[in-house]
Image 1 (cartoon, helix red, strand yellow):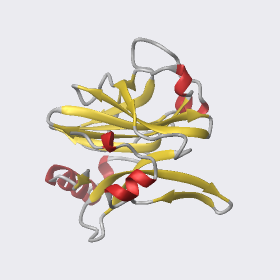
Image 2: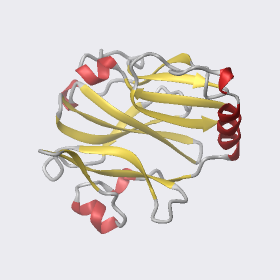
Image 3: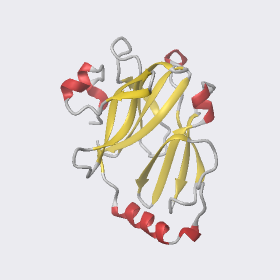
Length: 201
């Protein structure tokens, strides 16, 4: 999924850069790892890994309890907007990392890594009719027998003109985490255990 910064976001970012008196860092003081920000209409939204998701302390409920949501009109002043994902089966894991969002034909897709602590993380996709959810789990995108840990992330294309959403294997090495990607072909993706259902249709 290729991503270019819309003119509205570029204009806001430029205006904020010229007038730093309008905001003060950090623009959001709470824990929000792996943040993902996207634009819909006249608002921006943010989602990320919260303390409960990182620690494996998420609750089961019919209502969304996973991934804190924020909303903003200027990228500088943020307010809480609930949570995004209804917890899927506890058998899948208790640790939820690195959410990413994409939209196709008016349907919203949430990709995230689900596992047990820092082991056996599979990529899964959830869907919603609204950008703020609720998102409900639909399918696994990776096979744990082939890919023991996978993650969704964004990477620049070769021309550095646009960002693409990538779904790839993550390995922990003595030198730190190593992502086997970005994958650039269907053959590479399949070899790493990522389902053809990974892209929104």
